[in-house]
Length: 66
Image (cartoon, rainbow, N blue to C red):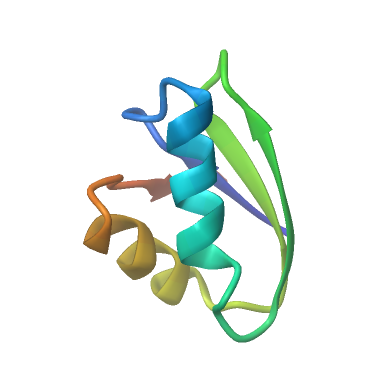
């Protein structure tokens, strides 16, 4: 699991855009959002760099939460 901080995520449309960008990536299995904390937990084996790059490309810069 990879936990991401996504500060610009503010609504359901944002979540749909984020899931749409990550779902096609190799190794992606599922995503769970915490909108209040503006975080997401991504299940699967997708490399962190690939997740961050996909989010950046749609205007949602993110960081990995350790």
